[in-house]
Image 1 (cartoon, rainbow, N blue to C red):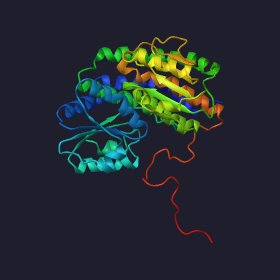
Image 2: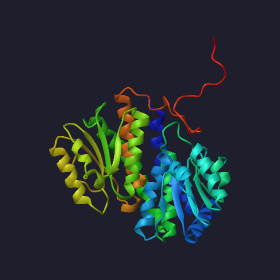
Image 3: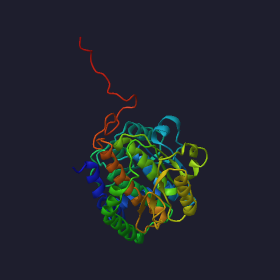
Image 4: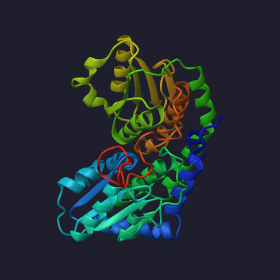
Length: 359
């Protein structure tokens, strides 16, 4: 049986290409992008935020700002809502697939009250975020069945294009080259599925760590969330650098690691990390470009893509692994046991009791 999760993964390359074209072609998408770029360039204080998978999209895109001397305040939406004040004239980039999550709705109201300009990046034209934002960037894509797949990657792409445009690092040429790389990734899916089916890296119940750097850091955090939502199994994610400052004490035989290798920076150091993990008895999945085929138990070769844009496609192999592992574990990746599709209240986990108890 084909899961809805897998169906969403398989339509993702086409949806990604459509989102990039929407923001690059003359029309509503390009006009909203240009308006957002102008607002951000004119602001002294810029905040970048989201929650859940949308927060991971923010992590992907933030690298463009930092690498080009255009720093932003990067914080989870719930933390911004409850523990931050916004200077007058701020711009707040809020990412949310539905725009209806409780923290997003309340954060948008708080930003408006503070006199901030909201750039709302969302997939839902009728959501509260799209209505509250002075500059809505509504990315056309059908919502996923449950786990964020297309909505995650299209919002990550849109936020990346926005950030790259602010620092003059996006052009029509990027549109063409990214589209080609995404198409090649789509064609690689059957190959990756064959690797997954033959691999012993997948093991239900294993301890799993995800490590990455730069723009792929959001991919590692998104993988952790997919393990939690889809496999119903605990996992953790962090930067590869941070892992070497204490967390390495957990390494033991058969611990599973997923490591993203950057296209340019820290490659040899992270390949050395993978070698050492394997020498210590751990099993390693690697995702990156031009990797040695024997550098892990499961090695996914990505098509050529600019290093700073690798996050657009390097999540796909992890999505495929999560879907397959959920079936091996006997977990239903198409339903949530405790989480709502949209979290619209901000306390507890269980449904609130209404009315009087029956006697």
